[in-house]
Length: 133
Ligand code: SF4
Ligand code: SF4
Image 1: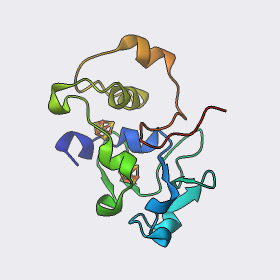
Image 2 (image 1 turned 90 degrees about the vertical axis):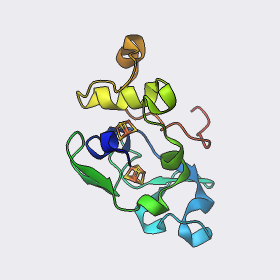
Image 3 (image 1 turned 135 degrees about the horizontal axis):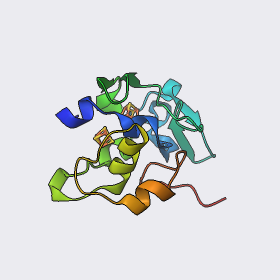
């Protein structure tokens, strides 16, 4: 985690963190299955993230203060692929949106329209997304 992320953690307590079920360690993957929840026959999510007030069970600490991931080296693909705003000089709207939820300023760029029209309980950007309801 970058220094900015170690004092943030907002994305770990905002999005649903869903991924292909075989990323769990009962199917050959790395993610401890006991920390996950089934979503569909093909998808699992990090425990605690499939609810309105999302918070991953592996998140330690308090968002916006000091945080760490208890399974950093075993975290699922959406976590490994999530990009901090400003990383590579690019504005990442999802990072900014999660931070805004906790009253934290964007690290890079601003997208005021997106910050106001989105709400929580949306999927964390991932290669694996649920189909629309
Ligand atoms: S919301 Fe952005 S800054 Fe905060 S932990 Fe996630 S990637 Fe890092
Ligand atoms: S597994 Fe770790 S990086 Fe992923 S959402 Fe949970 S606390 Fe955050």
